[in-house]
Image (cartoon, rainbow, N blue to C red; front, side, top):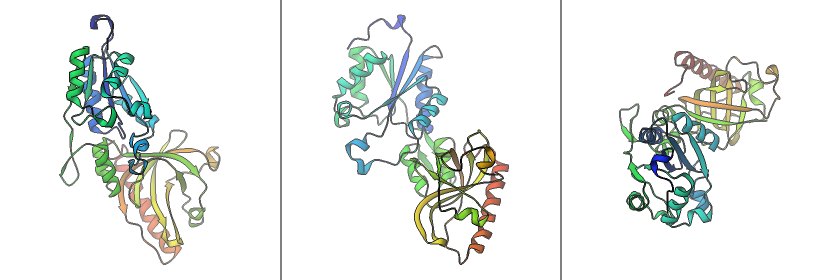
Length: 319
């Protein structure tokens, strides 16, 4: 492996490799250190496995997706990356020995430094680690910087290490405020509005039924906000889960956008338009009500709480 021209003749490049799902505080720290190593005149390249390698190796064990690739790339660039490339986990790429994988990266980017976390693994059967990477770098001529994990304080004052796994666990518990602490911003779900059973409009609370590939938090009612196709951000009350009051047991994500006349009034089609929703706070568990009237009373409370939270914290929890 030959880096080619001398380091004095080329733009300094820092490379960091991982899945980067969620782009949490630990990921952002990697990008920051990479930028510090090459300076503003250098280039920071993030190579993101997408989809997760486990989706090819053991699909049944693949973790839920926190971010689609476009969103992931956007967040990595906001954190300071100059270039973000998707690494498709093909059998060929995952089957390369560690030396062959690094050779491929070096020939492509000629990095002066790899910046990785302490648990970085690469190559066939994850047999390469940071010590292996350092040994290759000593022969080839690049440096390796290992960045400590980032600790985050949650609402109950407990300390956790920032990781995508921790974010997923917090979302599974409905702890969207704590997930925002680890992410550095509220969890965002983007999707397309699809036709539902139109029950909400009959109750006076027309909801957008969202189809998404992004992980949803635990079933329940949440306060959040919705970004509409024209870029407007409005408070929203969000329902995740089955609709037990009406014996509809399929899991859905339904969003009531506060103080909005609806898609037709905005010149949109009734269905098929994009929406992004941020989860600000857990409001309550789901409940089965004796009547639609009782449900409407509770929905009014939920909408009022979502609106109040939005007015008092327009940037959102962690945002």
